[in-house]
Image (tube, rainbow, N blue to C red; front, side):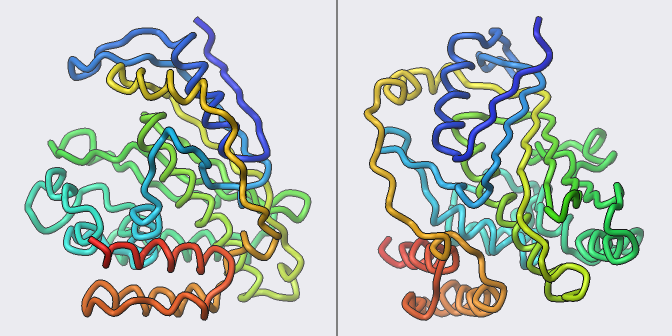
Length: 299
């Protein structure tokens, strides 16, 4: 059994398709929770350009309205069901109490806790103290998750930010990853968090971090798996002709901090008051997310 599987690409689409191919052809059949799946252990996905985070496919239908909403939910430091449930009502099926979601990554990353500090600001402080710090870690999976029964156990173990050669890299460790369904949204949100951290460091310490650049994104999973129910979709994906990718400039891919702050306010008006977001006031990834968030009003 090979315990090192590496896929390195400069865009997520090629990486995603290669991973599905490898899982279908090389994955070992396993039956966790009596659900047959093809698994490869210790998969390392290396995305050398984290801004190329989108999947371009006509076959694999995906919902970046949910992806944008999930990222907004993270930034709010929330674990509330009504927030993310506005965009994806079936999330209620994963709530233990009908009010919150146990994993609630945003609450674990940005939330205020009695027994440990705001983990996001703690990473910022570590880099302020030592640019070369190896302690820029945010823990998502708690020990309590192993002993407290829940419908929503975090799949992500930790996020590890590291600055080397003036580039901010992010290493994400997953205990388990649904390669066909969940990976799209994990990579979308985590690479945005990587860029958000870079922007925040630039803003807080311009003398030290003003020229900081976006580095590499590494997504590691102990169990990368493809459920047998998705094999037909993968087969169609493998024969899909390459989709023409939009001709995007560098500015079309950038996450702007000032615009992101405003988008968070506009998202509240959309969710609470059904007020559409004025898309043309945004650029880059904020414009992309604004367009996707507005689609919820079409339903």
